[in-house]
Amino acid sequence: MKIATFNVNGIKARYDTVHAWLRRDDAPDVVLLQEIKSTDETFPRDLVEGTGWTLHTHGQKGFNGVALLSRLPVEDVTTGLPGDEEDVQARYIEGTVIGDTGAVRVCGLYLPNGNPAPGPKYDYKLAWMARLEARARQLLAEETPFLMTGDFNVIPDERDAKRPEAWVEDALARPDTRRAWRRLLTLGLTEAFRTRTPAAGHYSFWDYQAGAWDRNDGIRIDHFLLSPAIADRMTDCVIETDMRAGEKPSDHVPVWLTLDL
Image 1 (cartoon, rainbow, N blue to C red):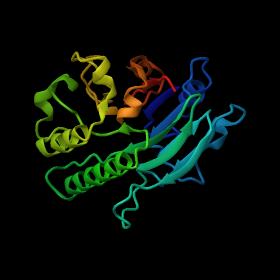
Image 2: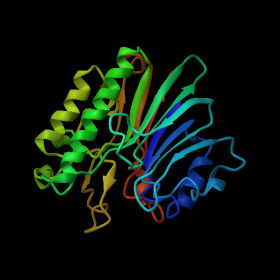
Image 3: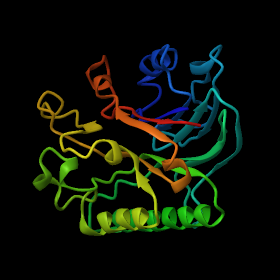
């Protein structure tokens, strides 16, 4: 089973790119999209017509928005991160994907950026991460095989930025952000990419400004976290860097996970 996460930075702006990507011979089996920036009603559903993909969206006009696409059977799709009934931002979607030899609960997320920090937006980010931790604890207690993936807006450590000194005061790398990230890991979750690739210099986001892509001035903020049962099934995790060099690219690129499932 191949699962990919991709922050598209606007599904309508990236329609041609995603349309072609889903139709490649080596297309993933499951895709989690972030920042679709579209309501459920206005999402271009012809994106998957005639492809065998099923599509579930949790949208919001002009901002945020997540989607779950699958060529495999999907059950029990839910939207919204538990823990705050007043939170109306469209940032979270879950579904159970049925593979050849087992099932995995797939949790797709677009974690808040949190800037400027400190401030209310950063408080919201930390509270959201606490709710995510609570959801992970619940799934672990239920012994549900699961993974969490998407744009975490977290730079885990200095290896994950070309210029780590430039991010010291940013919400993506502040000490409280990294502590919240480490609390997820200490639950027993596996950070998939780092298990396969410990070296520095691998990024998933390059700003559109100041020639960041040309200078490889990137950061790694798109991640897979795996529960123990799913970590045992992992065979690879890679970043599809070449997508950033395409026509009208997103500022993010897809990250792929391969499972023996």
